[in-house]
Length: 83
Image 1 (cartoon, one colour):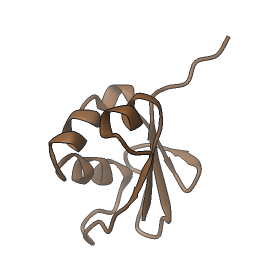
Image 2 (image 1 turned 90 degrees about the vertical axis):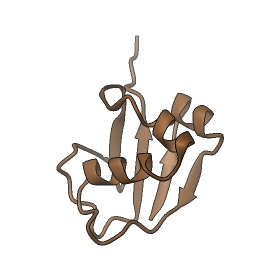
Image 3 (image 1 turned 180 degrees about the vertical axis):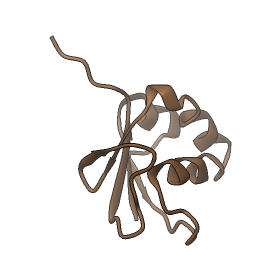
Image 4 (image 1 turned 45 degrees about the vertical axis):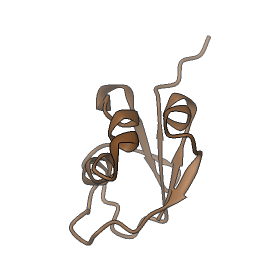
């Protein structure tokens, strides 16, 4: 699965994307986020503020219960505001 990071998430991790292979028990977007936070200290810090993160699964906004079992891509980004 390709993971994309945007804005300050990308800055904290020092990368815009990575390829990962989550274990079979990771079946939802929330579980994916928790699993990514457990990868290392950098991921834990960059993804710690779950209230300030939005998730997209295969380019569709998602909530923590959204299934990821067959997903090809997940993206993590802060809320977007416009004027």
